[in-house]
Structures are given as structure tokens and as C-alpha cells.
Image 1 (tube, rainbow, N blue to C red):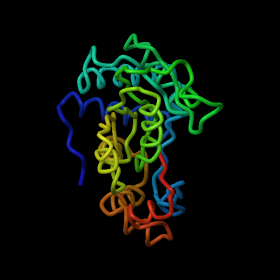
Image 2 (image 1 turned 90 degrees about the horizontal axis):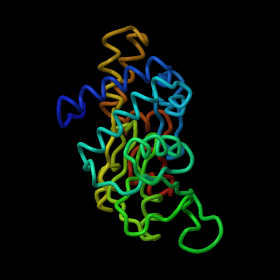
Image 3 (image 1 turned 180 degrees about the vertical axis):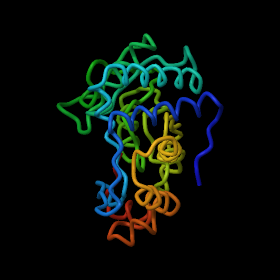
Length: 241
């Protein structure tokens, strides 16, 4: 089932982002040879948000939308620091921090050195309301790890922003909700499918198979040798982005 948007602005922002991602060929459909994510999920779709950094006009629009989204959903004066997740989140955090006129840092995947700031570069936003920025999320695993590192260092991190949210794998919202972490995103695969109705970016056969996946990702993944539940991913200790 397609995700509902909070407002018309959110819907327009989602479709604009989807059009840009399709135009710069960041969207990949490969039903006949599924992708295998770090988490163990099999998927006929893959998004490469790192391509955004190469296209100046595309990244300007997306980062403008990101800053507006954060303002609308978190607050225009609420964010005191922006932190990017290593590595893909770093450029987006820098551009968004510039628009929000906020300090920027980044958090490493693993500590380097000793002390409370061993995992955070720039400066530790201790006691500051911080938004964690990454390019995308699948099951939310990396957001949990980065958020915990920020909180352990003294930051107030209740919100995370991504350009793209897969919006299909089970447990992502529940896992973050359990940590009192709010996920904010620009668009999902459902928005990409809606934009694909406007122009023939992919074959009708590929679109049908992608829709089957989106409607039941667990069964689709399991039938192709991937994991089939969030519990299976947790049991194997393989969370992704």
C-alpha cells in the first residue's frame, strides 16, 4: 500500500525528488537479477543517492526541499546542529546545515581514538538539538547506531532525515520509534512508481514486478533466497541503512 503524505507540499516535494532521481539515473530496476542488501533482503530495486552530489542543479533543489521539510516537520528554529552519517550523509549534512545556518559535524561508523568525541568529527553537539542526516534508509539499522553514538556523546538527537526511504521493509519505523527517533524523508519507491506513469522510464513488465515486490517485500525476498522477516535480520545481526 502506498504511503500517505502529510500534506500537498509533502506530496509535491516527494514527486519532484522522484523525478530528479529518475532523470539522473539514480533509480535502478533489476527484477531479473535482484540486488542483495547488507541486511540480507533481496530487492528488484536499488537507489543510488550518491549520484545526486554530481549534479549541481539537482542537488540544489533536493537540498532546498530537505531544508524546507525539516523546517516544516521539526521547526525552523528548532535544530541547533546537523550531523552527517559516514560517509554518504556527509555532503548532504553540509549542504543542509548551510541552508539552516547551523553547525555541522559527522559521525563515524566506528570510533577512532578515545574519549566521547572519538566517533564524532567537527565538534560534539553536546546538549544541542541535533538532526542526523543520511542519503537513504532501508531498515533503519545505521540510523540506530549513529543516533546512539550521538546520544552517548551528549547530543539531543530525536530526529533523522534522509532523501530516500525505501518504505517497504518491516520494522524500520518500529525500531526507530522504540528509540524515540523520528524519521523524516523526501520520497519513497511509491513516489517513484507514480512518476513512472508520466514517462516510460522502465518497461511495463519491470514496473509490474517492482509493484509485486512493494506489495509484499518479505515474500518476494524469501522466494529469491533472501531473508523473509525483520526478526530474521535481527537474529543474524545484519541491519543495513
